[in-house]
Amino acid sequence: MPASSSFASAQARPVAPIVVAGATGDLGFRIAQALLQRGATVRALVRPGNHKPAATALQDLGAEMVEVDFNSVTALTKACAGAACVVSALSGLREVIVDTQKRLLDAAVAASVPRFIPSDFCIDYTHLPAGSNRNLDLRREFNQRLDQAPIQATSILNGMFTDLLTGQAPVVLFGLKRVLYYGSTDQPLDFTTIANTAEFTAAAALDPTTPRYLRVAGEVATVRGLQKAATEATGQAFGLLRVGGLWVLGTLINVTKALMPSSDDVFPPWQGMQYLHNMFTGLPKLNPLDNSRYPEIRWTPVREVLAARRSEPAA
Ligand SMILES: NC(=O)c1ccc[n+]([C@@H]2O[C@H](COP(=O)([O-])OP(=O)(O)OC[C@H]3O[C@@H](n4cnc5c(N)ncnc54)[C@H](OP(=O)(O)O)[C@@H]3O)[C@@H](O)[C@H]2O)c1
Image (cartoon, rainbow, N blue to C red; front, side, top):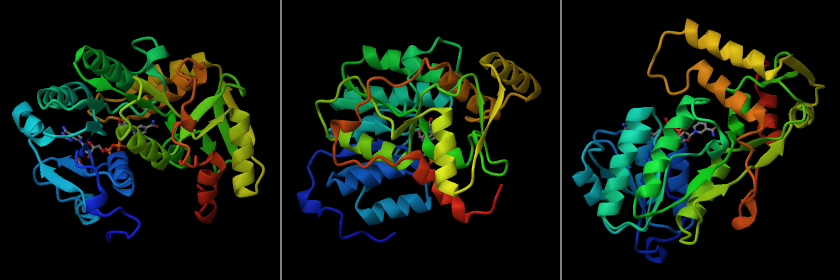
């Protein structure tokens, strides 16, 4: 990817870099990109031997690429030196979300970095009971440690990535022209695109006045709202498909977990089902929303994301 002329010149960039861990991942790459677009200096921490195209692209865009041993607090401390903020966009299970992020946090503190943004980027787990979502339990556990650390922390909560509606999340069924749901048609659900989440995170990383939590939703939609968006996006009438109450989804999750061999997969099918179950309960609904904090961000509606499906063959 060539360096764009819309990117601020290196001379205009603030001196203290923003460290991005996980910068060659889906979200992390876009956070680094959005930071560079805002004129920030970006230091991307990558694992040794990372030759992903994203690493080359970030280097071309002007990011400083630093290969670091994520198992070494000493090496991470050196890599964090002089930074204004550490942003984690790591993805994984306990070994990453709790253990690796803890080393990154210890390094940020040791290097006197003033601010830390953990890899949360999810529904509001602070309102969910422990045990209702494995991946979110890990975030809660890490954040309890983060709250004990002498560093200013900000978590970004964005609901579900809207992009998943055309892929992993089996809610908008393009082939059947139905919106599948459990429970109520009128429960408000939070959706934010990956790009919007990255833009907001970049703005927050450069803003030293951020509070402990920031909550955003590109669109808050009920199941009926998704039905309307899908109908408008495709020009074809979508119906509703109610599988049952939330207890049915709960039973399906338990059955799926029992049938599947345990694996290190971060997002096995039952994880997505847990996420949907959480959302349909309404407990992790984001409130209040901080969308207007950075008014330059244009929030992408669900309809626009679904409309991109029009050119694709029916599922
Ligand atoms: N709200 C939602 O709907 C939603 C959906 C999906 C994801 N998310 C969240 O968004 C965040 C980022 O996810 P993503 O989809 O961008 O993940 P991703 O594409 O898999 O990227 C994960 C990044 O973490 C790095 N990483 C993984 N294990 C590591 C380790 N042990 N040491 C060092 N680096 C490691 C990877 O490094 P390499 O590049 O070297 O592989 C990669 O850069 C996560 O918190 C995830 O849960 C939210």
